[in-house]
Length: 77
Image (tube, rainbow, N blue to C red; front, side, top):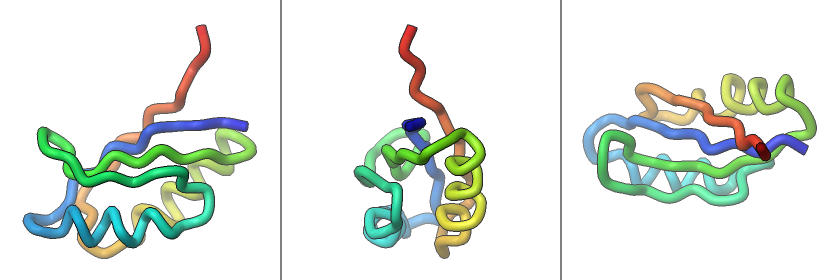
């Protein structure tokens, strides 16, 4: 199992709606709208890095109002 934080920038005023839509997607553990350089932070999990990438590209980036994403896989050192 691979987990990651996905940092999302949205169009002005869209953070809450984007977080609401993303929170219902399969593989999403949590989605919160936040302040700072990113508007939404998502914690997600998938079976593999490839599946995680597919989730981000095919599901998350397709949500209306998203302008940019940054995926940060969790590592255990």
